[in-house]
Image (cartoon, rainbow, N blue to C red):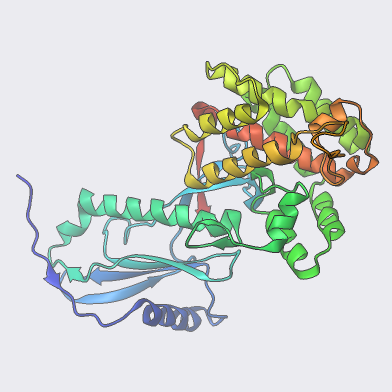
Length: 392
């Protein structure tokens, strides 16, 4: 027989802003430092004698584990230090029960390192139970889990994407962001959360695309290239293409950007065709329809989040309109399309047209990131491993 609990109304006249102010004041009192903390949980504690109090918990007192998807197929290596740029997306923020057992009402804040603001969530019901067994129940545990999942999805929008319109959960309207995309700097898993956030800051503050290119080129040092190649080699989709992709990275390292561009451009179409076929589908005849087909297969995977689907839509759209834009070397309908001078385009290169501006380190990186995005979006469910990490 299911136990019934009596809940009483709680007239605690404190709103979120008042509680956040109390949390900052308490942090300053305890640690004699600036009142900015990484996160804080305020529990509404019901004592055994039925009295109540609020208890503040900070990183110094309680760990906040989270589950995330590593960019590397198969997840993190044992004992490996996790960096922000290793995280594909956060799946759960695991709010701990009080004293590891009581699922009390709480208000939780976490500092968002991208925006510099606090995200808040809560299980603040306005009701209280004198029977502590209520706060040990499975029902209360499930409430904690659901809140953690919702918070993680929301937190991804700023921690991973950054610079978003919080109402639409998409990149905010910005001429700088649109210019980056036009120049082939598509927001992909490789570039998020950094250096894309910094690239947006640079273009919006200086409007200098050469500075953006330099910043990205500097970030993609030998270690990061090793990390990218390492995850390519572990991805099932790349089987049979390891030598080709390894050669492209080698050519990039040696500043042979001509070879790198020529090697990578046809692999975009090849990898997409391979993924479509291994999903037991026949690739569409027209390229535009094939990119759409690839996107639909990715979005049909249950393990992909809203953020992943959003990035997939951006990728497939710009494969159609940028990298694989229709080109014709002869007048058509009264005009002659000569091709983009800033973004490598497949048809021009593979039909033998020479555009010297294509062969730069930045353009090679654009292609490396597109290849990386295709590979990571095409992972099978057994390659997408959720890893647990402590948030300090």
